[in-house]
Length: 481
Image (cartoon, rainbow, N blue to C red):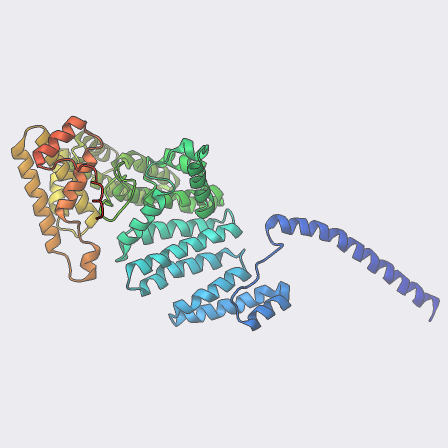
């Protein structure tokens, strides 16, 4: 071997040694970065077939290839509508690729929508919807601050739970309210949430942070900006997660999410009314949806914030939505004997949105009564319940004022509306889904609601006039002999 060949080999050895040394120094930096980003350790597949588990360990860094193969198989199962078989695949895929947020959002949507509707039992449906939401919470452990996960949480809570397109929607709402009663209650004690003192308060905060991935300080911020909200109802949580997307998203994400802000506020205003303060144990018997009229001002503000971001030739989209919203809320305010507020928004609508009230001579009362006559023919349970509760409120106020004839007229109108609505319901589950509560239950609910804001003397008088003595304490059980 020539001297030249030996020199070249020696040079290559030196270069290789230098490269190994450089790689070792770089590895320390990479390890620190991997640890910081959460890429250092990934969970081992559990309950997987031996071949899949062995292949995963053997290939190590090629886990992504296995995940891709499983994803293709999952897509095939979805095309064949074999949703239940996809569940285990989803678990493996999320374990293999936990930092790929699309895996979490897709599988959560599949559970909450495709799989849940395969169950006839409403309680079984709820478990799948709940499981989908829990999967998104688990995804946030691996992808904190992920905007797509925030958006999916907001959508499922708003659409699947908050709206009435699923026959089991009231079951979902009831369970959601029961879960949140234990954590946040109706309107949270923010002092206790932000600075818990007792073991019970600390447990609530732990559950809120760890189980539901919610920040107590941000809950308070959302309530100040959009509220007062009832945090037992899905609308408040849909707004929370939407705003988390705004906080963490890009400028494009923020603009897209904010454009839907007014629709979230509309839903909260129409069916996000606080349950009565005396409800601390939410049950099917005391759970009812009714308007949160305190949100009208904040809802209009949301319309205006969104309209300001639209180009001039597109503003009509938001203005039309605002016009329709205010037309509905003016009627509801009138029904709830809040004529001053109804007059304010009627004048606002007429003076600020072109052609919203073409007849300038029309009064608020004439507008409201005309709208009511046309609306009671629609099969909308939320609107009709709000209308009936408003009439019951007026009846009770007339009774307290000694106007028994007016009270009787309003009471008869409420009963007529209830019967007319129920008589037009379709047969079967479609009719059950949009059916109203029995009229006596609505009357009892509204009585207890009114007792939270009228004086104790008026409440006692009203119960006396209605022949409904206040329920006493539950008697102790009889001793066993």
